[in-house]
Image (cartoon, rainbow, N blue to C red):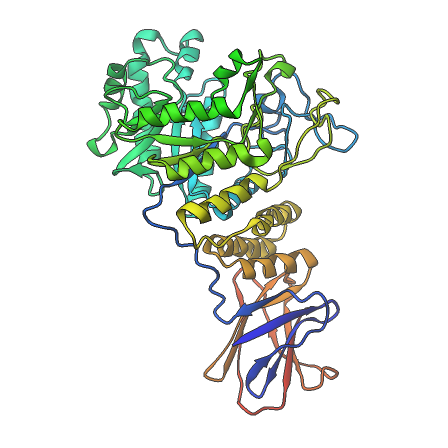
Length: 524
């Protein structure tokens, strides 16, 4: 049994009940959606044997609105995000511009948007770039933003793990925060913190029941014996499945992970070609074939801005190849013998490896070189991930690029209402839950209703002569009127529904064989 709910700009939403059954009644082009009765949504059950797809995430961005100033990763001590180009885009340290505008990694609306985009793109979780928990440089702030991100991921039922940057130890030694002889004991305390605050979380990624921990390098603790000592303070169940960059650290490491091989660009005038990239991946997979496990990394491109920012020389350039770089590396990662797929990265804007949706801010969006065009990838990278997940890991994966607009619509409405309207906030919270559970048709109805300033009807059912429907969209604090008519001319109110932050539900008995009855709802 299917019913079509129709929006009327003047009269709200309506449907017709004909001889005890639902019928369709189209009033305007603003009809929102056709829903099945239970509106269960598409199944998102993945192949339980499929390897997890994780994206490397940088939780290090700071904005003036939230932090009080623009952080280094938007400025690199060179660019000024308070300056705008002629098209209204901020000057940032990147060739690319985020769809949600330059943001703060502590912004809950941004985190929600990112997590929902990942969910709909077929990404299972996040590998967070992590610098420890010390209140030194911005490490403590990054840690708090990592906690915020992990909390949002847990709400969405997604996984997470850490990639520890042990280069922080050298920075702390140089700054006198710790001493070299105490470095291992300090790292032990760091691992105890990780065990308490991350490893024991239900969503933490585990491999063969061991928590997965990546390390960039290693750069300070370069011997396996040091890591054995560092991990010795952990419980037996929390000895990590440890992966370092490019090469396994024997015997403490399970294996290693790849990264865009930009060091190869030095032999080719700053360019990494497709053939060079493929050769690097082949050699890595050959090494990984004899390890207990390895993490295979996919990446879309590499186009850093370090030289323009005056930070140092560029690491080189790896072309997007119209999406083929990501297609090739991701297809390999999904089909080879790796235990985990890593996509590098979600949002390293400084190095240009982002898969996060970007917009075309017009040439010179970073006000660095108006002769070099910037590129907007929109949802292209996420669409590639959707397609390859469906092809290689989960034929029933239900989402497509059109669905990726929902998180941004939710983000925009969160920004519009802020915390000023608790009723709208509660409805947007329900939108989040519906997207997470796969009820995208209901989520669209709710979002369109909130955006249009109109109520919507969904989850319509008629069981044992009992009519029920949910009311959502934009709801007036003064309440909702339910009206009925037999001729669409004369309407009478049959119920006044109180609006709170709770779900508004209408119930009424309906006898079979009635004259056709039309129903509509209106904000008071």
